[in-house]
Image 1 (cartoon, rainbow, N blue to C red):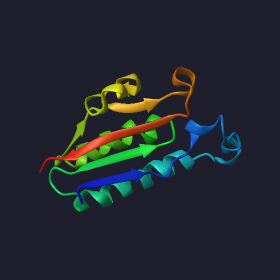
Image 2 (cartoon, rainbow, N blue to C red):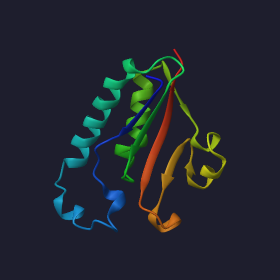
Image 3 (spheres, rainbow, N blue to C red):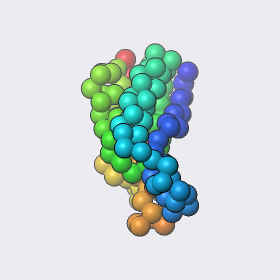
Length: 123
């Protein structure tokens, strides 16, 4: 494939203001189990992307364990990928840039909390 978009299953903690029942549905250990699933899903997609192709990983949570830590782990295990800073792709996205990632925060942007990373296959 040239492009893959992974809307990963996540804790949903970035949409609490619209779905407050999420906090009652989560159990201890859910976030950790979800982060393992997210890593497995990313790992399963690596061979499906052609060299030069782009994989976008997205969640609706603000937790690093489901976001940047998943991406950093993937990049350590997959040297054939690199991260492309989100601010370099669409100029107006700079307002949502947090390092190389897209991050929207309810208290800062008046939106739900979302995360996205753009990964490019280079080998």
